[in-house]
Length: 311
Image (cartoon, rainbow, N blue to C red; front, side, top):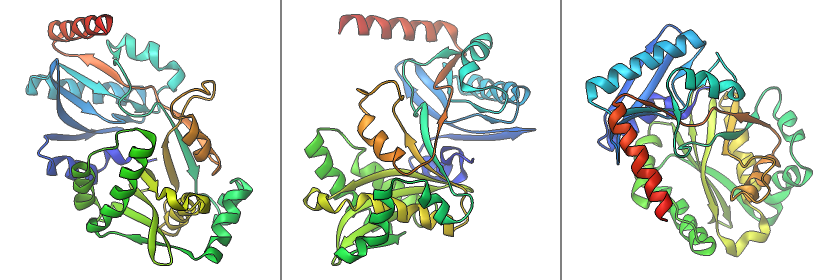
């Protein structure tokens, strides 16, 4: 799988926000890393990176990241390794042996849900719950149609639904400015696509997906609660998958899910929704920090722990 947060399209988007991006590669490894600021100072952050084919390649990538951090006077490197050299379950010992420490929290999901698009699309449909298949095949009888768009102006459709969902459920979505910037950067380049469900020509649900060379990532979605009984979000997601298959992509990444042994997790509801489409879980090592300026990193960790105690 090619991770979207490690693609040239994501690098272009980050640069459009005025951020400094580093892209490097070597034998069996590559990464995209972004300069960020946090209370410690400058950070070199590589989301779902570095990508490496072996433990030896991973070590070479880390050395390159440390070199960038030193040149940039960053306090630490933050990474989420995607490496063939070790499994997520073994990552702790391997990463600690190299001086890495678990970050205070994961920046990207530690667990994700992948639907593979191998074979005929009827095989993908067969892996879904019968309700999902039936809605996809029959919802047109209720006057619901689906279309895709790469016009960044249409991001307003999704934004409106996100506002409704946020007001209803009390969560804070990413800002309109941020998602509008995503749309302006990715949609005209073909790296982002908006899928819209309409009832008699009026939008009732929308989903934004990002594409890498072989994977479509289901990034943001929301619907009009007025038409909730139609369950348009289900056939909308199946349409997104069918379109990915038509474009020759190999996987659909439904993004973060809750651990199976945590039914009270805040993601439990939409985890059940994602798993109803068939697929498999993929586990990552999580987010790790490699201190470069050990004194400043130690002070940052101490200050953070003191703040937590005072809460």
